[in-house]
Amino acid sequence: MQSAKPTLAIVGGTGALGAGLAHRLHRAGYAIVIGSRSAEKAELAAKALAAPGMTAPRGATNADAARSAEIVIVTVPWASQAQILDEIAPHVAGKLVVDTTVPLVPPRVARVQLPPEHSAALTAQKRLGAGVRVVSAFHSVAAHKLVKDEAIDCDVLVFGDDPKDREQVMALVAAASLRGVHGGPLANSVAAEALTSVLIGINRNYKVDGAGIRITGIGPK
Image 1 (cartoon, rainbow, N blue to C red):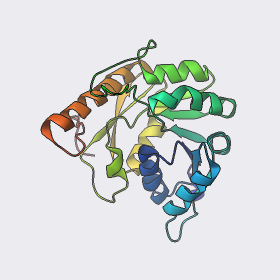
Image 2: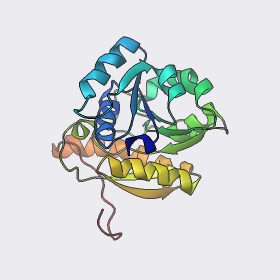
Image 3: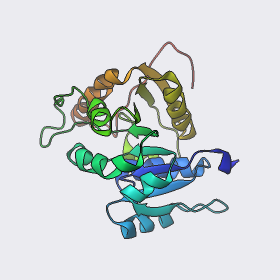
């Protein structure tokens, strides 16, 4: 059962979002490779994820992780996105790359600040080239909630130009015990990326622990 699922690389997998996604997807039966700038740091993170009776995740450099996986999930800060994408670019041709980047620019991370390409997802597609299938997702879910084995009241908008690629990512969202919602083409990712800054402001103003989004009118998860 586990072998039928694609191997996933979590690039930037030692960070909060990467670790949270790796935790949930490993327990859902996916083979996980944790990527980091430091292979040693990645190995330590992988060992911490190991669940009894399941194939243990392994750690590697970001490039090696991307090379060894069928689907690559990029979970790095905006400031690191360009460098990390350049590192993995030689190893992701023809692959599905899930970009989770939000263009947050400190110190005003609660203010929407979009890049010249209009979104981090379009920036990633431009940098990786047309031979890579970029899908954008996981912007609005609070990273610290993913490492807890409890329900999260949040939907995940999924953006990509090919509906079949979006469906693959929707399956990952479901495996992480979240509800995915088709958000349309990659260009629409700008909406979720901008909304993340809005949610940060909501968290501060209302003193809540990780506000999320819920799309109404389409039925239960």
